[in-house]
Image 1 (cartoon, rainbow, N blue to C red):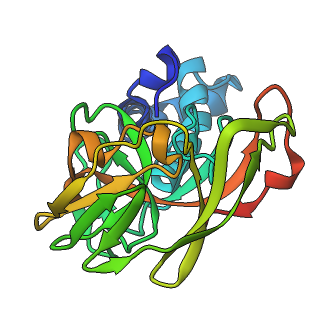
Image 2: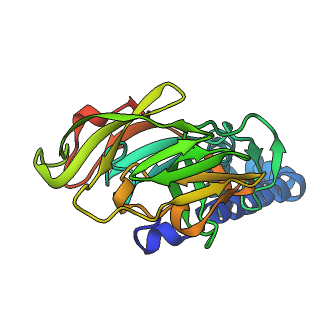
Length: 265
């Protein structure tokens, strides 16, 4: 979900390196230099070397952040409109890293199987065509599913994903009606969520696909304006990052207070 140069920095790698370096410095100091320094400090009433003082301050914080964002929750910012109306540009979300298996940071190797995606989940994953980029979409097809997309509707394993409750869409950002946009509710396995369509625009490509084993079919809720599995294919299981759970803040030229601390459906 990159939007600028800062989003393209490999933050997990940077965090791992920073934690490792500060931890190594602390360990070496504790084993080799601290005993002599303590004796010297007692004699001279001196102070810790500035590097050691900084390391002792930063290492616990870096280690805590590394563990938290690698194995529990990671924050993301939504930079594009592909998931409108569920997620808006400027939403800050929390993604559960243990929903789809605990993975090591940077190398993404799964070390603990804690679950797998279900239809209807909003999932973050590494873009198959460029794994440096994080994408977010909704899970429509699971491994082995037959998915048909026709006339702006999905059918999964012969079951039509009903859409209804059509209404004009008003953006929460500026409270203005979006011209040509229709908001509908889609049902997946009995659970409803809102989608956005532009009936006056040509529909995206139609067809029938079978989801391969170990892969998933994901699409954006902004159905006519989303770059998703309909165009570039399936998401391998190994590319999954986690399940989007909560919007903890919104900032896009101002705060939308009604979106704070809301669950993602």
